[in-house]
Image (tube, rainbow, N blue to C red; front, side, top):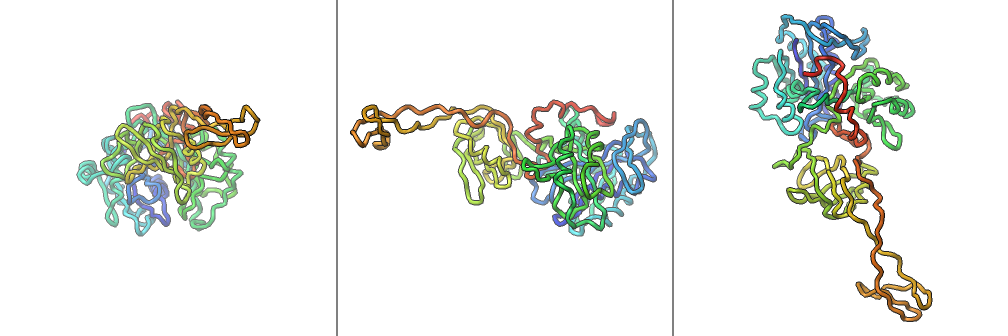
Length: 445
């Protein structure tokens, strides 16, 4: 069996690495079997040179055996993945050349593609470095030893391609930790034209059990991209079966082909638990609100946050929508867990958890004069109240306790403002997320 990793074939103005991988599958299937499901691996979303989703892909080819599962549909017929591979003599260099030919034809001119073909997978630690930090040249050279590999136009994608091979749905030593995405692809002559997917059809698939990220709370589709890439839509879920059974409801535009991907999306794998020495990383911190939120130009919200390592500002930006109203309701001493991207002393919030709420109080209405029944007025700061008609003076009444408008729990922005690796708030309590049934035996690796 040969493992194939591919990265950096797209650009900000189009292309898609999963499309290149699909073309590789289409080209190789007459001569090889696909072993296990295709894998879409999102890496550090804070690296400055990423394109859009910073996704790399991992495939495995060989001589298949055992259980089969349909994972796609091409114009020439269905795509099946095999659960196991039998020993076979395979030429990694020859396979590399075939993949490179497809990359040269399909990659964007400004991209820096990289591809690795290897009989073994790199150590898992390389994945964690790639999803939370930056892979150094020495680490990459060591991981590439013994493999067939190549880069085009500088080959920066070699790092991501190698990290993709290092990912396992059991990375971190926990139970199966992954999600799934079924990607529908457009006919080539429609690339760059408006997608014809109705909000009603998106609502229909959003109701399918164990799907997520289909639409925003206002009903607008979040699963339909806006770039001129080959993807028509991406249907995400906790298990593969609801996706393959439910996507037919989407329309009226239909995909020319589709492919099911096993992914690390919505795993929170990118969060470290301590601030980095430099910016450009994502973290999860616990602490308390140090200062109430302020609204700044553009509708952004900023509040002070105290944690074990000091203080910083947390920011909820305008695209996060109603999530900003949650931030507005926080008061000093509220206990939180915050998650987001850290840069230049600011944590750009991706979600937060309210752990405990500080007491809320408010000033009661001005008291009524007990002598004449008129409403009293403030006599000055910390002085009390005075009745203007009769001159009666009253002490200031005690502040009133107020029930908080928030409840403990997770809060996050709408799906359209959520990065790929962020686990949605509504999934945080689902134990199924960490206890999915493997669809193949090889998924334990």
